[in-house]
Structure formats: C-alpha cells, structure tokens
Amino acid sequence: MSEKTLSITSLRSGGLITNYHCSSACRHCLYRCSPRWPKEYVSPETTQENLRTVRALGCHSIHVGGGEPLLNPSCVASVLEIAGEERVSVEYVETNSSWYRTHDDACAILALLADRGLSTLLVSMSPFHNEHIPFYKVRGVIEACYVTGVSVFPWIAAFIPDIGVFDETTTHALEEYQEYFGKHYLENLSRRYWISPGGRALETFAKSFQEKSLSKLRGESDGCMELADVNHFHIDLYGNYVPGLCSGLSVKREDLGTVLGQHEYPIISRLYSQGIGGFVSHAEKKHGFRALRTTYASKCALCYEIRRFLLIDKGITSKELQPVGHYLYG
Image (cartoon, rainbow, N blue to C red):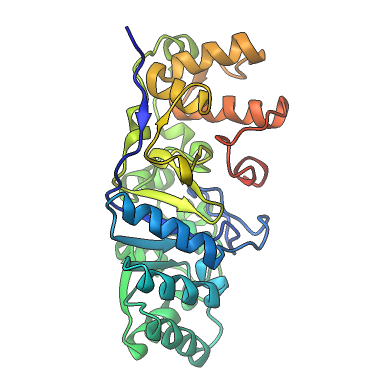
C-alpha cells in the first residue's frame, strides 16, 4: 500500500509574516517571536514573490503579521504598495501597539499606511500582551485609528474588563491575573482565546491538556492531516511556507504545488503519512533520539522535542526545520 503524499496545490486564506523580531515574548506565541530575534524584515523582492505565489495558488487576500510589523512602518508601507500592485488585498495588519509613543506620532504612522492602502488594524489585547505592553498604548493606537479613519479589529475585546482591573500605565504578569481572578484563570484562558498547540503555548498550557503516554503516542499511525490545512496559512520573510500552522516546520515557497516526497521533505512527508508514531520511530532508529519524558501533553509537544533534538543536539541542517530562530530564540 503506497503512503499518502502531501502536495499544497491551492491556498484559501493566510498571512504574510514580515518579521519574527518582536517587542514582546508572549507566552502563547505560536511563532516564538521575541526581542531576541534579529531585526530582519521582509524585503520588497520576497514580498512580491510570496504574493505572486499565493495568488497563483488561488488566494487573493492576506493579512500581515509578525512579530510586530509596526516596529518598521516603512516595511509595512512597502508590503501594502506591493500588494496593491500584485492585486492581492490586505484584510488587516496585526499590531500589539508597543510602538505607540504619542498621539500625534501614532496618527502620522497610521495616516501614512492608510495612504498606502491600510483599511483595518487588528489590535491585540489580552493578558498575554499585557505582560509586555501597558494598556494605555493599546487605547492610544485605537484612538489614532479613529482619527485617521482606519478600522479597528479588537482581538479580543472581551478581555478589556479583565485588563481594566489593573493600572493601565504599566504591565502586569499573568500571575497577577491568576491571583486576582483565581487559580484556574490561566487554564481558562485557553478556552477564551484561540490557542494553537505550538510555539510557547506548548509550555504555557502543558498542564491544561490530558497527558498521553509515550507508548500510546508511539502507536499512533494516523497521519498529521493538519499539515494540509490551507485555511489559515502563513508564509514568512524568508520564503518559508508554514504547513498547517505547525510552526518550526517549513516548505520552501518554490516547492508549493509539487509533491513533497521523502527525499526532499523526510520529516513533513513522514508526519503526513505515518503520524507522530512513525516520526518517533524514525528519529529513534536513525538519529538515536530518546524521549525526555514518559508522558506528553500532546503529539505536538513530542514532535517539537524531536525536531529540536534533530536541529540543536544533532546539528542537522534541514530546509524543513526553518526558521532556525524558532528553536534558538524560543
């Protein structure tokens, strides 16, 4: 019986990651963005190639995110201009508001971006972000949006009452929220905020998931079908396509539309056809992997441990384990 093969032949909805460098290191961040990442931003050439690729595969609108894109407003302006030239609409640009300094400065930045085609700003607001960003900055960005005619997409407005309990001129750790609202507050956050099982969420919410034994995970042979999900894809500043929100895994942009076979994509193809069980067995037999635990919160937690072992401990160079910073700066 032949193994299933993965091929990304069409794209539905997704985003462009302009940078992984970020002013924050949020505990739920799927891409493990932080100030530790290099201050690198997507180039005009990569932006153009990324947008041409996603449009050729049927996606005609994207969002723009990071990291924090507005740490470099000129980069965002360039992305908006190129998107217009390539006939790809930008649904919204994401921001954590850390760049806010004064009302006038914020209005000037947003007016510049509005002239380039910015229609909507997704403004992040949550206890995760409030650990790093005082809420007055968030309010300031929202006010600047109203003045400049940019629509606001508050993500997530339901957290405003929680954040409002505390002093908005400074930051507040998640532990402060837990002390005020109760010991189950962090656990309940995973139900109130859409959390993808990857990145720092693997550590932050490990106790929120029912542990699975290593032996049970080793026996799972169902392929990781989420790798084929194209409903919320991302493509980054290095030309890496992230399959199925599995951050730290990468398909090179130029390989989209082709069959991702065992030779070129041994990790992704094995995960897709054999699941976590096949990946564990292969890592053990070929690379000497030995699990650090007897139970795991999820298959994703075990998968990340294997991938980090291959890259960091074994020093394996792989176009699939990209960007490397995901494993170095996490």
